[in-house]
Image (cartoon, rainbow, N blue to C red; front, side, top):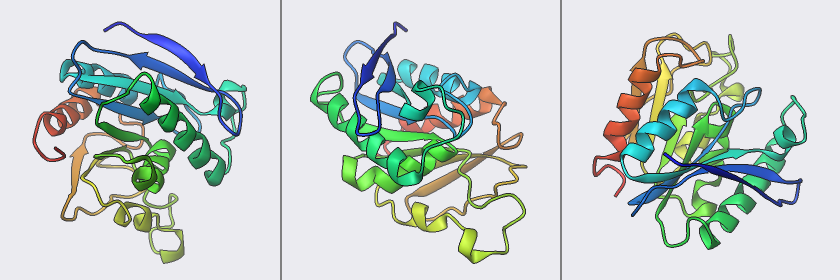
Length: 205
C-alpha cells in the first residue's frame, strides 16, 4: 500500500496526515492516535493494513501537539477543533466524494466520538476506548460512557479483555469485540480480524 504525508494547518498548528490511498476506494477511514503515542502504534498500523485490503483509503492523523514535539496532549477542545479542521480539509481534497468513517485508539477514539456528528462520519471505530481512568470504575463522574452514547452512527469497539481503563458496554448500533491483552492491544492479528469483519459487513453502510 503506497503512502504519502502532508501537513495541514489547523487553528492549533499544523497536523500531519499519513495518507494510504487505494485504487477505486469504497470509502475512507480516518484515525487518530492515543494521548502519549503516535500513529505508529501497532494496532493503528494493523488496522490501516486491513482497511486498505478491504478497499478503504486510510488517513492517520498526528495531532498538532505531536507534530510540535510535545508529549503532553492538548486539551480536549483543542484536539477536537484540530481534528474537525483536518476532516474538513481532507473531505474537500484527498477524500473528496468518499464516505468517511472515523476512529482512533484511546484518546483518539474519544475525539472521534465527540466529533462524529459534526464531521458527518458514517461510522466510528474505537480501539481501546478508555471508559474510565484506571481504578475509577465506581465513580460515575469519571465515566466517558456519555461520549459513546452520543454517537448516532454505528460504532465498533475493540477492547483488550484486561484493559484497566474498563470494558465499554455493547448497545444497539454499538458492537464490542474483546481481544487478548490490555490497553496496548498488542494482539494485532485479533484486532485486524475484528476490524476487517466490520468494515466488510453492512453494519455501517
